[in-house]
Image (tube, rainbow, N blue to C red; front, side):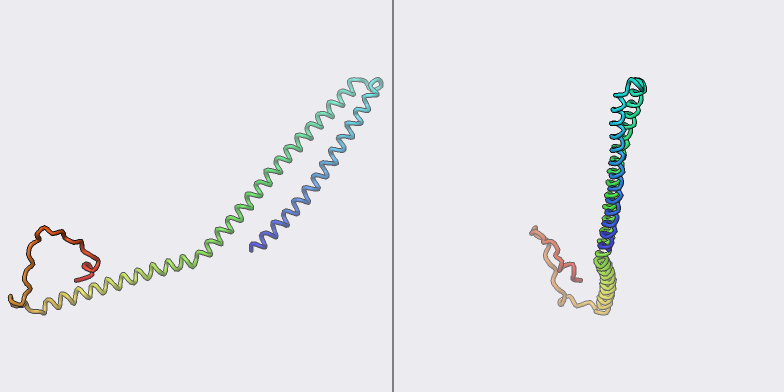
Length: 178
């Protein structure tokens, strides 16, 4: 898919280069025509006596106006072409970014599936542990009810009260005992 995209981009680039060359050739021809007109107008100035000063100045002014408008048009066109190229480059970058994001999303699919599986496994394990703890609690309560109380001699002696010694914090092993 990337190779196809590169191929299309290079084909588009070749077409743009060809169009640009044609436009530059047309512009060069137009500039040559303007230059020739300028030279012809300057040659007319040698015939002022016959044509009149006013006509020559008016033709020269019109020539300068056309020349200035052509230069402004060329600058504006060049600026627009540069902006279009920049926009084309940005859209090309956006297209490549979208393709990259899509590719990364596809590559991450196994990771997302693995995380989903782990989550489901934790839910099942928690449900099994909960059921096991419930069964253990039921067995413990039923075994305590069936056992008769022991005589006083067999019972364990009571522990002395806390004498101020530091109590130890319960450990994980203490929490697992019932």
